[in-house]
Amino acid sequence: MTREPPPQRARGPVRIIAGVLACLATGLLLSACGNTLQDQPMPNSMLVPLVGAQRDPIYWLGASFHGLQLTSTGLDPGGAYTLQYGDCVVGGVRCTTPIELITSPDNGFLPGAGTTADSPAVLRGLRGLSAAGGRVLEVATGPVVVDMRASSATLAHEAIQGMVPINFGGAPDVPLPKPVPNTGFDGQVMTFQHPPALAPLPAVPGASAAQIGKAAAAAEAAAAAAARVTQP
Image (cartoon, rainbow, N blue to C red; front, side, top):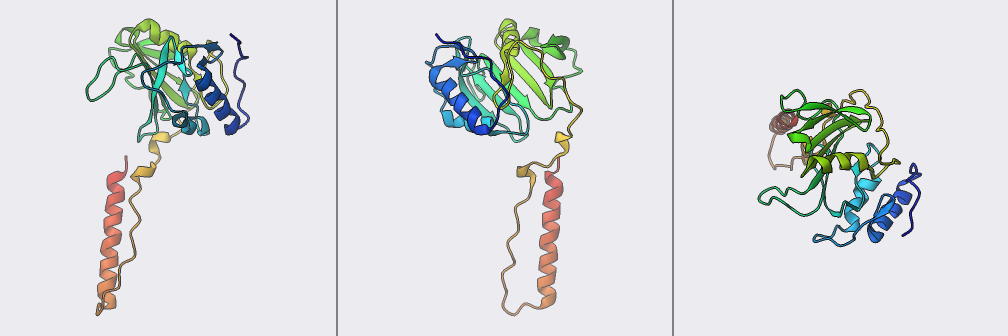
């Protein structure tokens, strides 16, 4: 089994994409090999948006971690990426897998911070939070907040140690970048919050200029009301 050198800082999306696809094809986990079999294969195309993202780092654990294959990726309306490893251990409306890794670009707060169930924890050299008996770990690093959820405290801590950005350079088991000041992401208007553009009003035979102006004003008022409703 051939070991590869630790990943270096990317020189472009194409090079990173090629490396990730090779990782998936050979079952490589960072610098180690893993089992390539999985019950729910992850198409390579599902990772291309993550690899090509250039704004913020998106953390992952490679094609597999401790025998758990990467089985799902998702992007929520708030801009957070969720990666799941392994098959569902709890079914129903929401699939709960042995590992769920969430990278959120909203670094204005730590999820769950201030609740009595959370305890301070040092994670990769940074101050973070531990909850649910250590099965949930949260840490702010760089411009993002990482939320690690696992089926056991041991697995959660090992996953935190092993995670690296899929779209930037990085190595496991080394201190994480220090968190940056609040980027103000929570105040940005997301794409889905923009009201759809209004089509030009059709010509109405016999309508006066005053009637057309009144209809246009009503349409503008409706668009303004829609924009206020969609504001966070």
